[in-house]
Image 1 (tube, rainbow, N blue to C red):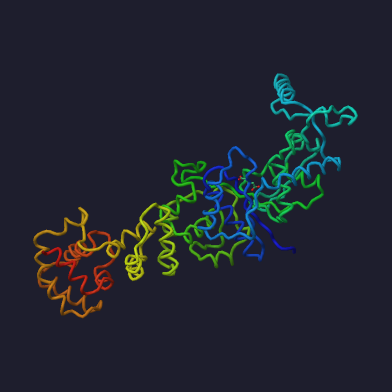
Image 2 (cartoon, protein in one colour; image 1 turned 180 degrees about the vertical axis):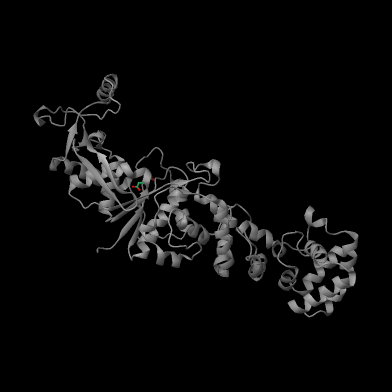
Length: 466
Ligand code: GLU
């Protein structure tokens, strides 16, 4: 079989939608799993709505998700001459014709059909069968000579065979009278020219596939394999919207989801393989196939996204996590790490990555290495610094000088302090957290003590007991 070539073809008209990211991911997985190519085309033909910022958001979203594309991103607008050339070639082949009908004539036609009770009025141009000798010397649109009878069948990997009645598909315009190509033409020409073998995209494009098939046939080109994937819905089963939470890929980065977790979660969103839930990208590549894509819309489940992300943070490699945390801070508009903070975080990572579902939680837990003396405690943490606990801290602090700085020795020492005062460990741990971190959600007191070291521990405790 020829090399597999897939693509993602987003329109740069806003932010990058999470559904586009999932479509890109499926295309990427399918290409990479099969030694194929994955291409990126920016569908910027709509000059009014396309913006460089939106293109940038797409490139950033793809990069964040680790979806590398082959070669340069292609601008659809830059191919406009080629689109026009193909439209004229269709004319020459007799699979398209010049249509001189004006907007008003088309509107009148539709109004008449409606008045006559037609529920669906497909415009039938009088120029379809006109003798070229009668053509006026006026601008014209180029329309497809679409079959008027019979059916067009889309054989879709996900949806199965889907049949469209040809009498419901009009002789669509491929080149407007101002010489600009329509979306329907541009997509097919680009996919053909880029050698795309598999079109994997949202099922909102399913009926476009029928129209696009006609363009392939009109040019005698090979039709790609179609795979139209159901869209992503919100947790309530309704079409995903801002009301449900984040819809832009960039929001997920800014909310502290790690890209590996996001990739895992999005892979499982509408695709399944046996009972695989948590997996690395390498494992996803080994399992991925188009046959695993389901037919019903996937529901976004933020709880599952979080637990998936938690697993990836816990299992993430430290250097990669640190790098990604810096990306998160920038995306969230938070201050960048100073060198001492970066070093502290690197030391603390083993104990803060365990139960953090997002980088927001991780950073919260790592506060004890990101802050410096004097530690400013939050209100909840301050409550644990009552006179009794202060007294106990006061007594134990100088004794820490003589404790050897290992987990076992610290544990034996603090257990003994608790026994002496007849209190449970929790009663001692709470004020220690306040002194060491100024917060209630922290790693274990032992881990904090080991990470910041003996001198700093004693200094922080001394600050509190005064
Ligand atoms: N530009 C289209 C979109 O953003 C995608 C077209 C396609 O995948 O064929 O929805």
